[in-house]
Length: 255
Ligand SMILES: [Zn+2]
Image (cartoon, rainbow, N blue to C red; front, side, top):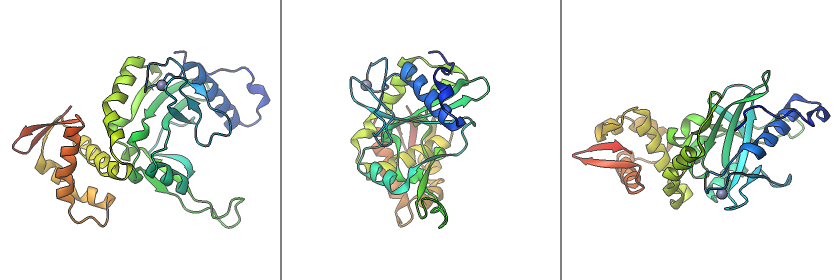
């Protein structure tokens, strides 16, 4: 993987944001590989495919690329809120590459892959509608809240200027793949409990420690008054998916 962004054909683009989009997409078409199968490359999608920038020529998995010159903060600006919400519920969100490049060195610094099955509605924030005097007045966009995506599902592809071997990226992706079998509306709770458990920053923990996170989980799911029951149920789901192990007597281990 060569981390220098291409420079040819960029002189035709006037704005810095256009050059960045064309440069990073062109870089992706020669450096991205499929995380879902063994394909060593991804093809650029046709311009009119909404929210899809790359397609795997072998397994047809779809990928979106979001690039920015600033290091990642807590949020990534995404497309229309209603579209994103519908895409999640209908299970048609693409996998997402989030890329941070160095504008001056014109190189790729960081790429994180978020598998399509790691998106839950709790990770999507509705933005304020555009002001009445805006060109698209009333349009409502959304932010993807990176902190609400479980740490396991923010898979590094390039970390601080160092590419990771494709085998490791594919392994991390396949590990979470059982989540694909859960219905999108149920996946929300599972991902939120996984995220909460990871936030304990322990590989071994007890049920009472997870109960300690009850309030923050309740805030993500207003209207659910049986949060502790839900926590126990989701710990079982995570065990069945192979992401957790039960140690007995209310103790658990991360896999
Ligand atoms: Zn593939």
